[in-house]
Length: 126
Image 1 (cartoon, helix red, strand yellow):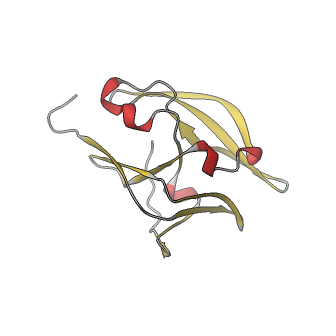
Image 2: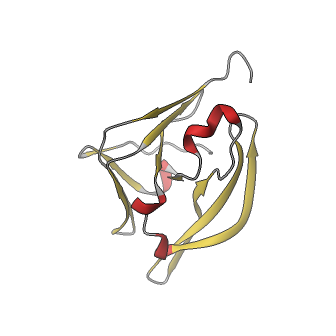
């Protein structure tokens, strides 16, 4: 890991809601916050707190040198499919093991509410 690039993984006691096209697709009181140099805070949620019935597995995979290989899912709401909106690291590198199996949504592509406050949408990658 670059000495200038850092990730911090912190379990938090916050209430997180994720909405897509007016449909709540996740709600959790058990988020894990991932702060990474140059990126907005990411809210990783247990899959039990995500409406996995709305998820469709994607063929997309990416590799991050600071977290490992991510798998993606699209979210289907009504007739609309939001491609590659959710990702998870099923087997992250040891430095990122605190997010193993948790699911994360792109902040800039969903309505993200944390403890009743809507978070600003800022474009960034996983």
